[in-house]
Length: 508
Image: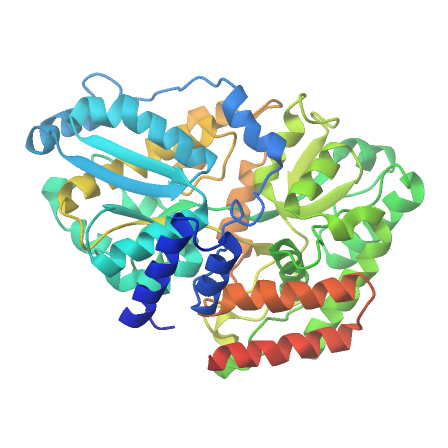
């Protein structure tokens, strides 16, 4: 993967300018970005990793902000002393950051106003925007090298494209006088550092969020039908069949995110592909999406359709979560960030009935070295983002102090809880007493966090970091898969077309 050329940057920045002024449609701007290999793997951008109701929780639900002895908001803590001391050098300066409008960002911004600004005297200008708007501003900033934004928000699909526009965080960590107390870089979950905050083996940013696939099931139905939680693909299929035969049409065995032409469908497909030992690419950049393992995976996926509600081909992950909250399925595999919805009585008919478990074990698993473009097979499909410091910032040291505070164990814990149970990025987040206290039925529950952590450490699957991946996955794969799931096209024709388009993408 190569970084964007100067010519590409200017062209895309001009497109972004036209888009922001209403001279270019959102669709036109996004298509231009996709053609340049600037995709959008963020789930919020592509339809939200939760339902609209779940997003509303952050506006309605009042959760207490619980501090710890490592919170900068606690008097005489090392963190507070550090920020007050360094604030003397930077007081009156302004730091600018633009991120996607997600629950963790909403609450980290609130905490920045309440805590960081008051202690340091540094002004924080934090815009929350749709991801395409974030990209538009990022393009303009890197073209002009203006330093308008001190801290960048990067969808993982962009890392290789902007790697030369960021300050190496590992170099900043060598400056011991700038070290935020208790920051501990090694506390970040290593798979996240490697897969969403690195490029070419080098760290370029700090992990920020991480949606990931887990298995979720109705314990009341499993107890009633005397079913065990499936640990293999055969067991998953048999369990889906048993629930459907006993409960349909009120309740089906499982539920998918199979909306034709939507990225959600491609995400669903990858779990079954990787679980059958397949991959999108093999070695030497050669597509493997139409080999015998991929064919077996699609046969399995299509067999599951018999045990899904009839409307499944019209649902993205939002529809999937909403229908699961209505009690229409006994189990499913999808983004764990949807789990807290099921414990909220305002939106769910299955409060206290849902449980989380690891995804079934893969039949076989192709290694990363057998793939290309950093594709890493694993049934727990992930999507995430990172934060990076602009090389053009005029306040690099102040930005580094803020970034350490914003991604510290304390703030990631607090923002995750206030944000309704979003997936944390640090090891210590999962053992924090404040997180453990929410490990009970109720809004913003963390009952699923143990399974989430296991998925990140042991089962995580990462899509190819191919420049044209975003365009390939949506414009080709999601479309062809939609024809397959709706019976318009055979499995063989579907996979052959996907392989042909994948090969074409490697040459662009």
